[in-house]
Image (cartoon, rainbow, N blue to C red):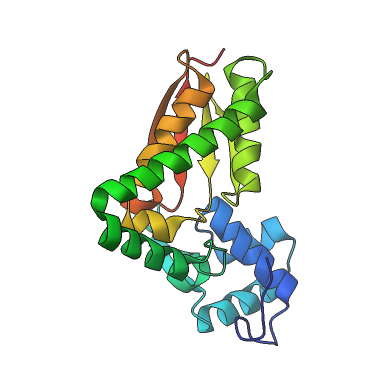
Length: 220
């Protein structure tokens, strides 16, 4: 991920700014002290970077209720401008193309486009996951494929189940204008993982979540 002088104040260290933005993108809101500890910054350096990112409107404050009678805890999260620092697969052109397809061919034509995309992804995913051992092996392959496509995907163990976490959506703009893309992906994941796995979407970026998270059960 690259930052231009237009995107970040030249006085901000790009590497430090990038680390903070990436931390908030992948792990969610955090306090200044947490950022300092996790990124191995001094408290003063962390405060300085946070204030600069705040002044550039790349992050925004969100208060977390105190456990007791104390003051609410101040955390930081990415703003819309901060999220926009991560690639979105030529969002403007994508939206234009979706509008043109609907105008020329109607909703049916757009559904055919989504179906064709799903067929191509199914072929590529199934081929890549061929030979993977069990659902867990397929899930690992799937996460690597999605990460390579820009979804910042990873797998985490959660009790006796797994979570497929996608911290970024490179087709978010397209999905906002046509949620058939999201329906297509959920169906595709089920086919790739096989009938012995159950998969449900627990968090959804388009429904107010900060990322998309899928829970996979019955893992072989």
